[in-house]
Length: 122
Image 1 (cartoon, rainbow, N blue to C red):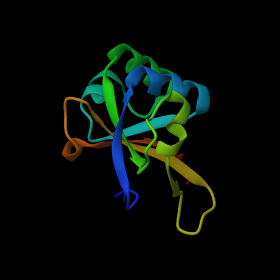
Image 2 (image 1 turned 60 degrees about the vertical axis):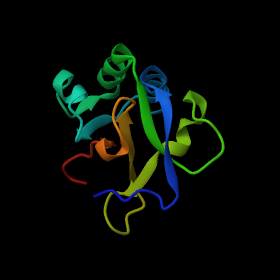
Image 3 (image 1 turned 90 degrees about the vertical axis):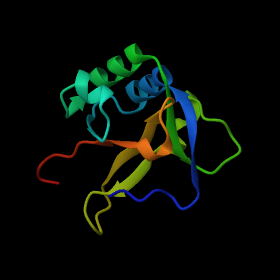
């Protein structure tokens, strides 16, 4: 289970902005989703950044994404602060990235996890 930062909140971002950020910043990743039905119905996971970004762009809805507490609004340019980084294994300096999100028409109790898919040998 992923433990969120102690002081965090959810902030809105369009799925298109999120898709653009993924394409620009992490183009060569594979992704997995846990607890989300819309994407799971449209994609086979793990999937590429391009497939995920294309689907998010087509959905064109607002996401709520977990970020550290801040007065700043979230945008495609400031999305880096929403990345949750976790060690691949205890004591390992390699990290994988993950996001906690929910669709705008849902609530925080419906949050789901989008995370980098790790190779089997990690």
